[in-house]
Length: 349
Image (cartoon, rainbow, N blue to C red; front, side, top):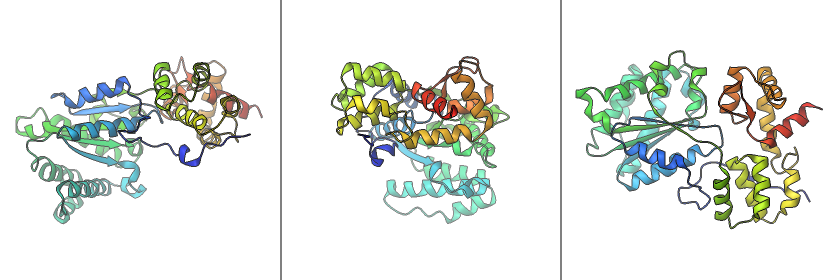
């Protein structure tokens, strides 16, 4: 029987900080230490898609809030495309999203008409004044932890370079005696994309000054921990077989284990996982669409499957997207054998 993982299980997304399926990794400790360091202003959380970056960020915010920090979130995924067309649109969208969160924290509406007018005239200065007046000056004894998720949406947009330059200027304010207040602001930037592909000058961005924390797929021990947290649906040999196929892909490992918990027989499930009509069919079809969206992507994947090196730019793009893995384009590999099997079979038809 073709066991289908439910659509609810396929949605993925960030886990609640107290979800028992959350697996602690070294990155959790690194991020916790980074946000508590006095000399840290920008922390870059980077990793391929679907490695748990948003879950890591949310857990950190939850912890720091419990310790007394004020936590704010800007989720760029929530913004319409028009928000990225100009700096005015972008700064207004950020301001309004932050104002709504401040209203919840303070327990009352935050009037923004004056702030919006400033942003409309001078976007970067207006947003900076909003942060100074509404956030920093009104919380003088508090650490402010501001997380920015899905920052990838800014790359390649008209407003992206100017916004990244603004973040860099806030980092530089920490060295100014008159700007000691800004030392209480810590910004966590979450991204998958390689900034070097889109920004001409990294010196005008936070990407060469921020403290970097890399998130990767599960190790074998971390996959074992997840299996235990789910009630050990897989026997040791089954877990090893699944890990060999998925290379520790966090989302897919969890979904396959949950499917067995829901009643699937592992011996029947395993051979279905690389099939277009199998439990991961929609995921694999989206993967194929992305690979085929550009000829250079398809060519790079074919080269890697054949055991060859590939061009640097498509390698970086495909690694960010979670298709390829490896440290450099001269030694690339597929993220997991599941992807190699599926894409090789589709290309041979």
